[in-house]
Figure 1 (spheres, helix red, strand yellow):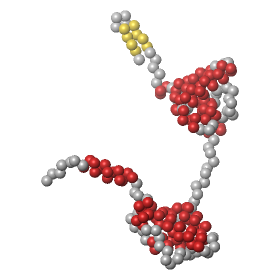
Figure 2 (cartoon, rainbow, N blue to C red; figure 1 turned 120 degrees about the vertical axis):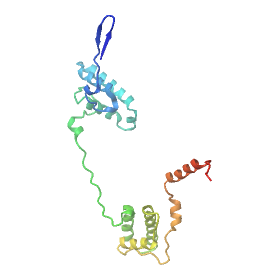
Figure 3 (cartoon, helix red, strand yellow; figure 1 turned 60 degrees about the vertical axis):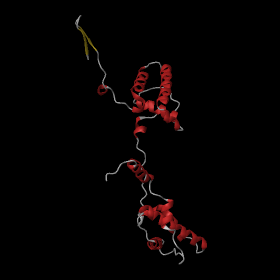
Figure 4 (cartoon, rainbow, N blue to C red; figure 1 turned 120 degrees about the horizontal axis):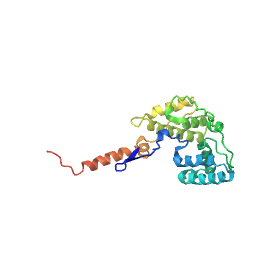
Length: 225
């Protein structure tokens, strides 16, 4: 950028610093000023002075990123971030093990995703586990009560999947199928009423709010006759 004085015809050149010419931010949460301070610390020759500067920088980083204090090891995390921002060039006495570029870039071990091939996935894993537990129980009132509870849970899960229609006969048939016919309910057993289940699990509130807001918008409007 150039500024000129028309009377004396003197020109002043000001060199502007653009982001396109700046080095990339290693961790953007701390901003460019912290990165510049860390870069300055790397250039300080006296080790004691570098240690003092490093501690001050960590204190500033904690103020700029206060949510990190919610972590149990937040102080260790701040020191690690400082070394990462310095591109692992900062040579100071750290109270924690100094991370290396290899350790930071190392990928975590892959967590295997459970592969459960359920025939009726809308019932979920817990109900399938309950059925397996009921199958292993001895015949008696305890198994009967547990099986009836499972049947009602299946109906609730089915209504979460399809609120428009549910057939109690289908629920009982699928319970017998999933249990390999080892769970049998008494002939007089009746599943919980559909209306009472839906009353306990109403539709999402946003649908009610939508109707409520439309009522207020229409309130007071004159109708054309």
